[in-house]
Length: 318
Image (cartoon, rainbow, N blue to C red; front, side, top):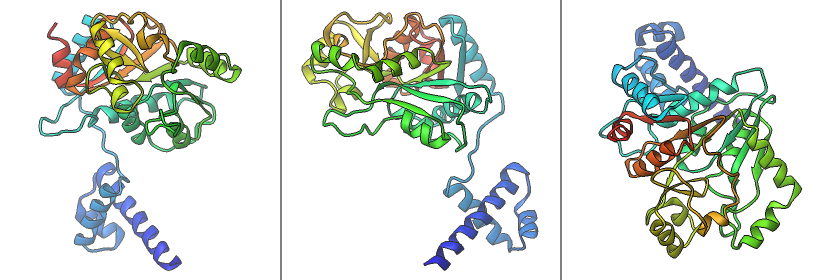
């Protein structure tokens, strides 16, 4: 067993070298074969293994003109502090491809700093995909803090808890919120938020240098509904009140104004600033989220955006 494990480790080491030589150093497969002392076919297999084992992450640095143009127009129209638009793959069915990688790259810009940084995180599938793309590193100088509870309705840990994942990945102190997203009653919300440890987490989140959030829909396909945080009648009530989207459970309308009452009275997440004061970056690309993203932009709930060219084009059809 040990012998096999050692052999697997050695092969991954060879694959990493081959991947580096090919993608970073620009060697041909013949040159890789010669440098590693293997056949050309073996060199080819090692490069393929480096990709399949995700030892290599490819990021596009070429400034694609259309994406830059869309980014500039979004900044101007919505008054954004930052905006990155990545190419779209028309054949892909993924709701994260390209955008998760770009968001990971943006987060890494903060993580490589030696100056202490507080990063606040929302939750959801897009942010989880973003975290999976972040390179492992040691960042004891930074703090990762959650904006939203990590407890699912059945009491289990949420599958989409982001802050614990990123804390483990970059070896940074992290501060989760051991709460559900929405309290059963207003009274229970008051009791839960009276705990000193939670107040400390909320205060830390308010001091964040940068915040990354996903943007959800408020409709019959909403993640809040699918994951059991709200009931069908509660979603329908929000829709009748004009809600189109939500950020960490806070529902808002097409102009980005927070909905009065309803589930917003029981949301346990860190309150949203309107307009956002520090850097708050929305990460989204799925077309069904168009109205939600546009509402967040109009209401200035976010002042940064990472998306793809398809969503960018739709956002500019005002």
